[in-house]
Length: 437
Ligand code: ASP
Image 1 (cartoon, protein in one colour):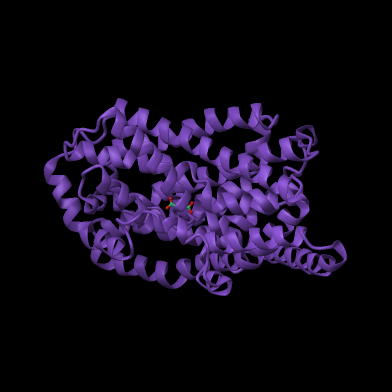
Image 2 (cartoon, rainbow, N blue to C red):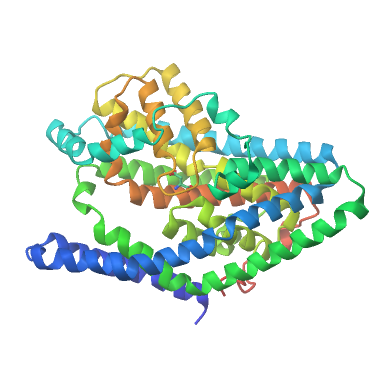
């Protein structure tokens, strides 16, 4: 059986077993079932999932450093780097803004917050208040000029050690650009070392992907077995608006961008990036998906390594289509819940802030929540109101991360088409998948 089929089986069966376990843990024989389900999650499924996740995460620092440095150095001269950089970031911003706008239109049409019962609202606030306060204590609610200053790391080793992605990215970009200014005989040895480092990392990712069916099972089991499905009833409209928005953006806008700007059929595009989609969905982390994404871009879409190595690491932190949509919808939803009217002007500001905070959010599970609290506060709603949606956030996080990763990949397609000799016709639906195959 092919590995990607096994991964899909892992995903579906993990979800199914988790939902059944959840039904037992919240059902009539709750007293006996709940501790067993918790034990299984903590001692079996959780650790298996975490090992898979860590195998991916441990490659991030060497991968981002080697692929970005090589990507920048591979672009050659500094003017070209500037042009590709501007093109890449422009795509990130435009696609993210389109996504946030779709979310805002939907939330205005459906108004999911208008009918939320005040009793349920207070109950959710009480249940999740401490989690919301934890987010706030961890830096939520403030964002400003520091967000930009902090991109420049004081110390690249410290940035790497604390997995400060923007810091690592910034250092690697400057390092790669500096290499292009040195004579080739000086830089050749280091480029060869980085190349070998990158290849070794890809091997590690191959090992990790062998674990994926079990890891994905474990990660999904833990989520579904602990998820408050009961919350989906009162928050159903809100959850549906987010999911529908994500779906529309993927099916319409990203597909159009891939076809028009990338010259690639959306069907082929989505068919070949399955491994990235499943990894993003099960890990809820753009960072953890980056290694898979780079391998998929190079092998499945045949995107030149210097383009994939440049666009995707940047995208994993800076391009979050799904997150911006989620943020826009959530801010408006909470404003509706509290009856705070938001003018068109304020809504446009929400779109801009959603794009900016999506750029600044960390590509980790729940990475956008602290910054989202800042946006909520700006529109005049208590940031602690985020407590209302925390209980359903994981499902939304899995889904928005998937779109974040799909957005990154579409950016790579666009930049490859315009900045390299990549030919979209070289990618066909019929070829066997080689990542996770
Ligand atoms: N989990 C998301 C990601 O990694 C970030 C977020 O929206 O919380 O892409």
